[in-house]
Image: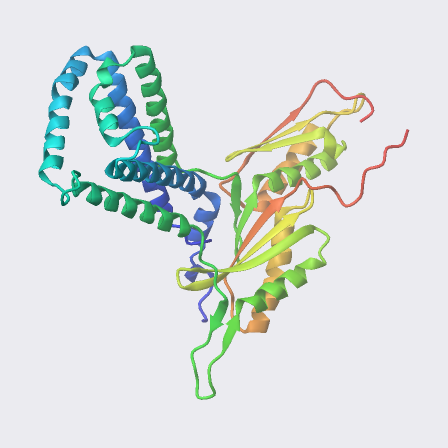
Length: 201
Length: 195
């Protein structure tokens, strides 16, 4: 329901996975393929010295260090900032607006999500089948969608729960004057029965 | 506003509710990468200022990578295997569907997503009633495409397997689950005394 970018999640996992896999494969290749180890021993010092050469050629004033280090730090900071933004971007998608009717000569109508959420929660509160219910509103593809999460008691049929909630939803439709899209999420099922079983001995 | 159900993004919602977003894993990885990056930045700054490194200065790191082939083979194999294995696990996690233990119901007014535990518990109640056993003597396992009902009868009382099967099948049909669940009823040959 939320608008977490799942593709991005998977891309990050994939990239980190491939980097680890490549590093692991490299280390394994170095220990199992002697020829590769020799090539590495030949080439790595050259690469290392040419990098040091570049660092010496790019001095930062008279500090004896290279300004390239500053560039590296900036790049690393950008990476860290992007990742922080990535974490902060998870979830989201709640909306406080349920409906906005186009304005007419008499003004415009806005229905807040809280109306639908409280009406639904209250209308479900007295149902013995349900242990608890929670209603929230999300924006999905430009439409406000109600998410009705209910926890039901042990043995309650999901069809019965759906029927009850759909009935209440239709009542809500009547109140707000339009059909509000909704997702019903049913969980629970193992929480204690209404009365404790008695053992006769 | 007069169109009916299909205009809503129900298919997308149901797909997202029945599959894992992989958020936890992605956030954990992001935090680890941020920590690694922060450590690298610290080391670079310390070496620029001429202070002693926390763990290893950039120059020492580079030297270490250059000298990789000289390290002990056992250590290399251990480290390499762990890295490669972690990489494979992550790649698999990135590619696989990450199905949650949930089913969706066919509903005309709304999209419905049900935990498998709820389906199992409802099936257990109906199976217990049809088989005339205590609900605690039934065990139901709901997978992605199969629902297995196991009944431990009370010693000395026969369980009407056909009735249980009929009840379970009727219930499953009435739920209208997607994907469909194939029922399987097992009545244990050894009963339980006094249940």
